Image (cartoon, rainbow, N blue to C red; front, side, top):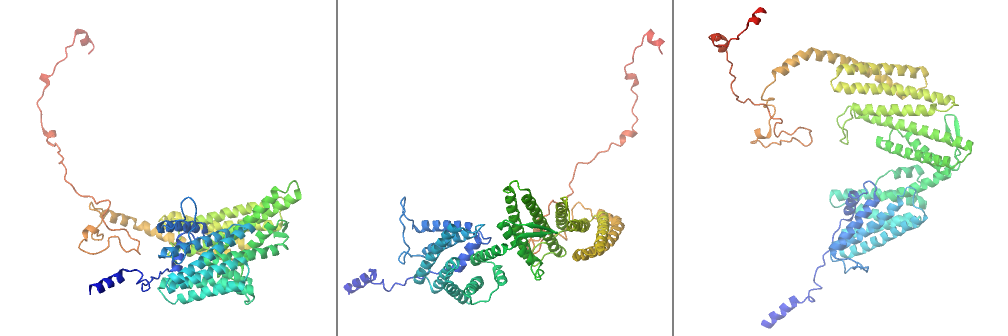
Length: 601
């Protein structure tokens, strides 16, 4: 009996006996959620791939040290991550962040201002190959060591990286399409399960993969996508779309270069300026294409933020054109004809840039006006103040004056330039009227009725003057004419309101003064209306108020109220005036006088 017990004990203690029965734990990683959180918190919210790459490097350094998986001291000896090495989930994190570091490095090279050159593109493709290598290893290890969901997400991640590599290489579009579709199918299935946050992330990734799939179909020839539809797809946002956007921008740049070959002159106010530099032609052509989006039939349907973004791109394109023109001026030498053409082209581009600046500021004015009457909009932004509109109209007046000076400079002025300068003067008058109106509104909100009344009268006078000039020409901007008519009506109504309000306040002034005097108290305001924390300790109520409502915390009254305190009595000696004191002349010392002093009496 003892031998049997001893034998059974030995069997239990023997590790070889239960090795086959031991259950190997499966690791779980929510890959998409982990990567999305890291990307949004460390630079990719703003497209900063350099910052994200540094984060991945620091993260890998911490993982290597915490796992004690360093590659030797002094001399580097690489340690491979294999199936037997992965004893905890952090080893899978090592492989994943190494792939992310290589991918972010490639995307950083892709975002260079002038695009990667031939050597940099070779390096970029090398980094993408490295990302594919580590992503494939991550998928293989996850299939062995991870649970089913982790394995699926790892496969989708590896397919996405392979698709990116083939997408950048401009070859094997069928294979790239197959990889993108495989990743999309996995994320579509994963989006049906799990918590709400995970479902939203999976759907977002499916939407980000869709443009790349459509572009691959377009390159294969199985899709009838037009260039405008590709541009519309490129307006979508997301880190997974940055490679697609870069590819689309490269294609558009190549198309512009081909179109720019036929663009030899720049037309402006009756002038024709030759364009010899290819960079200048491409930049001006890019700006003109963007201007079509602003002035096209679909411009009114664009939200304000998109239109502001288009204006920023237009400014960048025109600044590039001016930079190229001024570089040509430096290298023009002593050729007067070439210099005159370049100076005229620079003046024309600067004038167009000034026009777009005025249009952008007018867009900002319209956005601010829409926020003026409401407290908060849908995005919980604060309402505009009249002072902000006054500042915007100051900018418009400055822009109009600069543009008028630029057009008026020069000796040989064409009729178109003269008409343009007159239009600038009329716009300046309209902007002055608007500025005066909103300045009066700010004084009205401050309770200064006389000043507001005077400013409204001045704004009405300026608006009527500008309206008469626009109606006299007959071919002015109808939008400004309509705004001036509305401004005249608003000025008239506000003049009446300020006049009536001022009279009412003047009549109520004595009553308000007497009421305020009667309310003066040493104990401060009425405590029945203001209950502080110390006065309602028996009630479970918040002293700071609701978080959604802007209110002053009611903790303690500050400054404290006045209190009556005792003081020393005041003694008034009233009896002194009614006492008759005895005469003291007989005790006073008398002066002795001589014979000579008697003569001078």
